[in-house]
Every structure is written in structure tokens, then in C-alpha cells.
Length: 522
Ligand SMILES: Cc1cc2nc3c(=O)[nH]c(=O)nc-3n(C[C@H](O)[C@H](O)[C@H](O)COP(=O)(O)O)c2cc1C
Image (tube, rainbow, N blue to C red):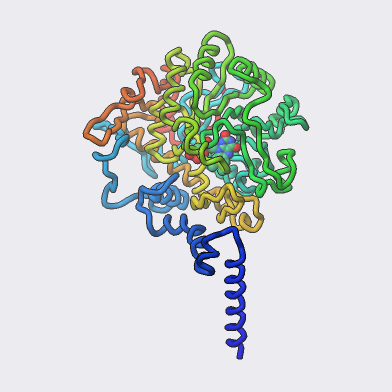
């Protein structure tokens, strides 16, 4: 008897759907094809996942290909991250194909049980952050790989906690993102505090900058440096956006904004209005806190950078570090036209800015940080050869803690609980377990960076120059990176004193095993 009732219920359900489809006026496809039309929406919804798992090839998908994702996941889980049978890339027929030129007699990489073996594969920065301007809290960052800005709000609390705990385990710095400092940032990892145009954590009720609040935060939290955000690659020219669906009560309290409404930061700063007043602001923050202070920006019009370099060479004011984000960088939410068409991609943008400083001899005084898809050994090497002293990574660590590239960050419905504020979705993310995965991934990335450096005959990735890398053009031609980017021989490397110091640190490290190379003060 029950099947009669079930059949009747199913029949009534379909009848209601047919009537609804025919009567509604919003979707032509449903009016024309009642019931069947719904499959189109269903397929559209699960299309990205289907393509990801079934249709696309190893190198096809963007932002990150299957090979890249597989490498991150395997590294995070300490699984075998090797690939078998040789490369499946078309080296000779692909334009802009990167080749690292190995030395005939590479430097050995110590293995477990051998003298000098370091299971953490620590690589300290070749420059002292804040060293040139002698900030009182200048220090040598312990890791050249660090976590890039991602706010609590765009990421869930457990995700931020996993990042912070992971940074402590891997001995690297955690950038807070522009959304202020949340309790999730306070699990042992040291912070770079990012200040955006919304001044979250250091603002008055009307949204303007408040120095006393900034000093209060600096005194309470483990902040090692301050980063002033001018822009990020994925949405240069528009301020930060946290969509209404992600502005929970907790996010609203930390940022001081209303619950359930889009949290949009202004597109420009109110505390300064050009390179000159920006340098005054930088010096003021550095003097009041003793911390190194830098800027983060994507690269568009070059006049800002040439003016900044001129001002730094003609006065005793300077930024301690410059983080350059590429137009291909990520975001929790951004307008598509901005993600796809505003700001130069990393390599072009970075090299342009770097040259402005190098031509005035200022490149040795500034710590350069690169971001945008650099969380892979070969991309990181490209960045170091261009002159980066450190790299900052965001989406790759997201993948290490479980992100599956579902690209739903802007909806609040991230299925893995990484980029959402939905309690049910984030309850599955265990911060302690994911912290270990993040640390595993960072350590494996550093291991491969060190192996590649040694393969090229250098003890440290900062000692790799544009001569070590060659770019194939797809028609049997090739150029060194220096030729392609117009670099002089001394570009892309730290100054001679820094080179000597980092070489002796790495040698001591190799000879003595676990040498003390944690975040040391000046
Ligand atoms: C979810 C998410 C949130 C982000 N939030 C910020 C932010 O608050 N401030 C910022 O400067 N950049 C932010 N970014 C950009 C990253 O810090 C980084 O510059 C960019 O994603 C490039 O690095 P990647 O290619 O390793 O992801 C965010 C990126 C993502 C994916």
C-alpha cells in the first residue's frame, strides 16, 4: 500500500514543479522545458567540480592546475610528492618556459642522519627587516616563505587559527590581512599586521586612523612588522570587500561594522595622499612602535614607484619592505573585470618596480617580498632571481588546510569551511590537524627551494641571479632572465655584506646542524 502513497506524492511533487515552471516568468528555459530545465542549473552548479575531477588535463585548470594542487596536497599530508615517468610538459613548444641551469658539481643536500641535516629546512631571509633604517625592533625573518595577508572574515576562524598554529610550527610569519587581529591570530605564530584603508583595529568610530589604538595593539600582540596595504592584485583600485553573507556578529565586532551588510573599505587611504605623505606616515609608525614598516601594492602606473624611489634616495625616510602582488593574485571577493584586467602580472610588475629602486642603488636597502602563485618551488626560484628576498603565499596554504579550489569564497558557502563564516561548514575544519598540514607543506616547499638552489650551486635562494635562469620562447630561442627583464649583473641579489652574512649563516647551519636561526633581533 505504501508504494501507492509514495507514487502519489512523487506525482504531486512533479505536477507542482511543472505548474511552477510554466507559470513563473524569470527563467525562459524552465517555461520551455519544465522539469528537464532544472538539470541545466544543477549541471551548471556542479560543473566546476565535474570538470576538475573528470574532464581537464593535469596542467589545464586555473588558478591552479591539477598537478599543482596534487603537489600541495601530497606535501601537506607528507605523502609521496614525486611524479613518475618524466615530464608531461611540451618544453620546446611552450612559450615562457622556465629552465633552471644546474651546476656541473651541485652543492650536496644533507639527508636525515647526515651532518647538517635540518628536518625544518629553515631558510632565513638574507636581509635584516628594518636593518637599513635601524628600527629598534629590526630582525632577520626566520623563513623566506611566509603566509600572505588573508583576513578573519574572508577566512573562517578555524582556518585563521590553523594558519597561525601552522606558522608557529614551521617558524614563519603570519600576515593578519586587513581585517584586524582576531583571537584566532593568537596561537603562537608571529604576525605581520596589515593595515588597509579601513584601519580595522586602529580606527576611530568615523573610520579614520588612530595612532593610540595602533600602539595599544602592538603592545598586546606578537606583531613583528606593520604592512600598509595600498592595493592587492586581484582588485587593485577597489578597497577590501567582505560580502554581507560573511559579516557575522563576530566579524562585525572585530571590525566595528554592522552585521549582515557588505563591509567595503574605501579605495584609498585617508591618513596620507601620495608618496611624500606616505613616507611621513611610515616613519611616524616606525618611530612610535620601533617596528619595521612596509607597503603592499599591485603594480599599475609606474610614476608612483619612481617618485617613491626618488624621495627615498634624496631624504632619510624609507619603507623597510615592499610587497608586490601580481594581478593574478587571489581574493575572497572581487569584481571579475578587476581580477582579470587590472594590475600587471607579478613578474612584469615586480621587475618594473625593482628596476626603479635598483637603478638608484636602493635595492640593497629594501626587503622585497613577492606574491601571486609563488608557492611552488620553480615559481619561488623565479621570484628570488628577480630580486625577491621573501615570498608570501595565500591560496596554496589554503589548499594545504583543505581548500579544493571550489571558487565559492565570495558566496560564504565554501564547502571545506576555509573561506566561510557558516558555523556548520566550518565545524569540520580541525585547526590543530590542519596546522600540521600547513607546516608540512611549508617545510616541503622550503626543502625543494633549497634543493633547487644547491642544484644551481648556491647555498641560499637569495644568491640565485637572473643568469641562473633561462626562458625558452617556444621556437627554439631562449634568453636569460636578466636579458629578458633588463637587469644589470648586480640586480636581483642582496648587497655584498648581506651575501657574506647569509652564506656564513647557511654554512654554520650546515656544519652545526640546528644552528640558532630563529627570528633574531638586530
Ligand atoms: C581569501 C583571500 C583573502 C585575501 N585577503 C587579503 C587581504 O586582506 N589583504 C591583502 O593585501 N591581500 C589579501 N589577499 C591576497 C593575498 O594576500 C595574496 O597577495 C594573493 O592571493 C597572491 O598570493 P597567492 O597566489 O599565493 O594566493 C587575499 C587572498 C585570498 C585568497
